[in-house]
Length: 371
Ligand SMILES: *Cc1c(COP(=O)(O)O)cnc(C)c1O
Image (cartoon, rainbow, N blue to C red; front, side):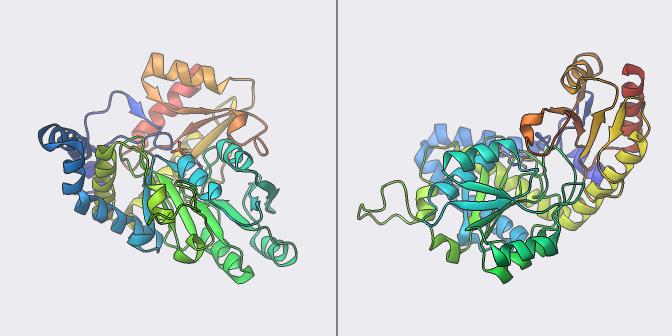
């Protein structure tokens, strides 16, 4: 059976067209059932007893994350999502608080960096916002920041960054690289052995909302200092343990582990190739719709396509209209999403592997009629 059919069969029937996996993918019935079953188990035996019983499932999830990132299962902690992961990491950084990132850095990430007192400088990029690797190498050699923060795939633009090359350049320069894989995980190859990497469950992995992970290599953990409880307290809590300490919905971590297992079973490479094909098909179908410009190069290997209005259309209003009148779910990206790169808001579609050419043509037709 092909991947698209497998994906459809595993899920509740969709109401309309779901072109919004970059915001939140559709969970499978198995994931939904695992979350519900854990809540039921909590009611039967007690929340903390149920959590202990589920430990092997969480360990399997860590193992899947390890396989997909090139780090070890013991380097992985569950968090409540990508921004939480970044805040945990930066909040425990001991050294000088400087970092370099792409000019198209995600707005909420910039807020987390600022809140943690980090001075931010820009990595050199080309006209698409893609890092120019050899220029970045020169910058890291002459004036290195304490960290590179690298968003491997942005939320506002489906341009794949040269992740493996950047990891190599940072290693060469001796600068730790922290990878935001919120959009890249389960979408681009993230098995690159970054120093730290994090993502969210609900996006391309199609797990539950409110969960994510952070993985940090031991060499980088050694450069962090526990915040809670305070490092000077003589208690046997490691930095990574402290990251996982807060209250959380255990059922979502179990659901995420199931989604990770489904992803490995589907074949990460097949998923990536299929997403790249869907993205190319979308850009071909959407090229030339009056009033809109496709931002990405047609063969960008991602399933994120953004449309910039050329005739004054308002993506927020168009998104709302598409949901209310056509049951088509997309995202409107305002400038705050990438304040140092975006000059116009965009309408984003982020279809998953089940999206057909007919779906894309239907969407293009609706957008053409609406414009
Ligand atoms: C969604 C997103 C985030 C934040 O993820 P949360 O789980 O909402 O914290 C960070 N970076 C990028 C590129 C994103 O797309």
